[in-house]
Structure formats: C-alpha cells, structure tokens
Image 1 (cartoon, rainbow, N blue to C red):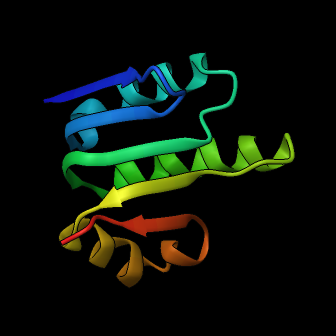
Image 2 (image 1 turned 90 degrees about the vertical axis):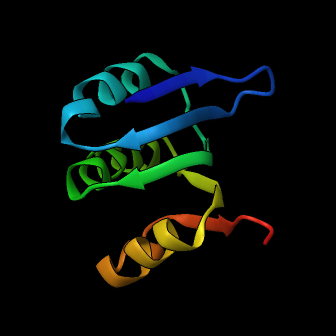
Image 3 (image 1 turned 60 degrees about the horizontal axis):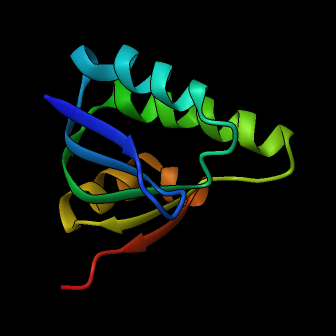
Length: 98
C-alpha cells in the first residue's frame, strides 16, 4: 500500500511501498504536481525497480524544466537500492538520520 500527499512545505511525502502495484498511483500524483522538487521518504519502506522507473520519469521532466529531484530521509535499505542500481548518481539523496 502506498500513501502519497503534498506536505504543507511543498514536499511530496510517500508512505508505505512504492512497488509495481502502486506505480500508476504514484505517477499520476507526481504528474499532477507542478514541480515536485523534494520527495520525503521518511516513511517509505520499500521501492521496486518499477518505482525507480517512476522516479526516473519525474526526474527527466524536472531536468527539462531546469530542476531536479531531491530525495530526503532515505533509510539504509532504500539507499542501498539506489546505490546498487546507480541511481545515487542521478538523484540528490539525503539519508535519514540514524
């Protein structure tokens, strides 16, 4: 299950799992945001390769507009996924305080 919402400070907050079953929901929400510059993963437990694909699409759109995504509060497990996939070179990633 995935919950996704815009925070008061402009961050996009993701909670739960961004897996194949939730990608359409995430893509639709992120496409509706004018400039989703900061994604907060404090409560995201899991991301699949399909979820990484959603983030890549959003990153490409943001870069065309002169911006990019910053992903904050990334737990160790998800950080490892970004690192092993090479996506840590694509996004600005800030690890969660541990």
